Image 1: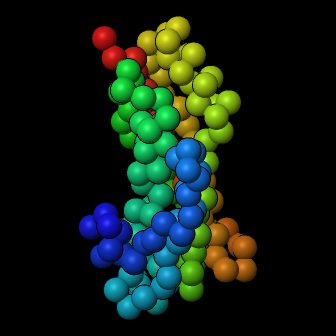
Image 2: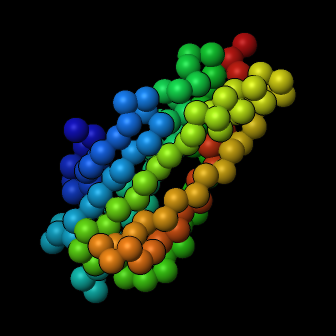
Length: 136
């Protein structure tokens, strides 16, 4: 029930109980189409925006500060119909981040995700930079 997602028609289709994996979908609707009848680029980016930050915040715990720092999206082909993105950070990667931050204090981590259409073709690729710092 996240308001920006309601307006764009973005839905969480599935997630893991440990909050390390999210599957997000968006159907093409009249209210998220662009001028040429395909998915609006802002909605494609929006469906990817919070998940890596959320996974890190939830799994690293209250002793860490986590912020989205950067994002870059490459649109590869027109998005039509239902599109899907899967965000996942393994427990091993989360542990490695925690250990590194405990050692060096802060860092920015880069995550990649592909947005795919119903045929499995990649519509867009997103690169997210997420800043993590140990609280004082």
